[in-house]
Each structure stands twice: as structure tokens, then as C-alpha cells.
Length: 192
Image (tube, rainbow, N blue to C red):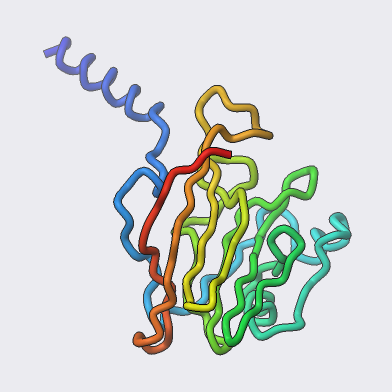
């Protein structure tokens, strides 16, 4: 009986130490639901006002309907790679709830708006800069309503600066859904 109890405790300890499997390691399923409310940004230690004061390169953006919606929901809107992505009636904008000591985004996601309405996120969970499954490359919006985004893949030995791999995820905007929704459709591993 004691041997079984020790084996169960050992297995539990090993499982508790195992890293959680990334969403990039599982078959794609859609986490975006048409008509779902925009999630609230929950500040991670600092208020949005404190973040914009300390990190001057992160001004509070409220120029577009997507930026205003994110700000109203408690997120700090920001442009990925200092580039605004607005084409036709589609807007892709980052929203963060916190930053680290060097003003890098933590607790952030990438939000897609269609006709001013939230259509979904590019990741099923909030991301942290310089970690596995965080946005790490370009985000492209094509004329046919497809979106491509690159995510970092870190191996255990990778330095924080340099993930050893990337995954490109492709999405489509389903305009038949009411309201429109972002649907992930494929993943492809790439090298940095």
C-alpha cells in the first residue's frame, strides 16, 4: 500500500513539473465565437495610466473603433511592430494588460475587428513577450480576408532573444457568421 502511495505521489510530482502543452502542439480548433463579448483587460500590477507614463513609446491609442473598444475594455491598444493594420473594414490591433521592467508586452493578445465589431483573437490565451507561442513575426492581412501570423517556438535551451523555430498560423474571416468571426485554418512550422 505504501509503495502505491509513493508511486502516485511521484507521478503527481512529475506531472506537476511537466510544462503545459502549447496550443500550437494541438490540432487547431476555433476558440473564437461569433457575438461573444470582448474580454476585459486585467492590469498586471500597474494601471494603464502608469504603463503609458513609464513606457512613453506606448501612448494610449484611441483613433480607430478597434483601439477605442480595447481601451474601453481595459486594454492598452498597441500596434504590433509599430505598424497599424487597417485594410478595408478589417483592423488588427494588439491589446496589453501589463509590461515587464523593460516595457515589453505581457498579458497581451492580438484582436481582430470587422466593421468595428470584435471578431476574435489570434491566440486562444494571453501571451507574454519572449515566451513560447507568443507573436514573433509579421502579421499579414490579405485581400481575400486571410490573416497570417508568426508565433515563436522556444526549445528548452533557447536564449530569450532567439527562438529556434516559428509557426505560421493562417486564419480566415468568416463573414457568413453574424457577426463575422476569425477562424484558424492551418499551421506550418518554419525556421527563424
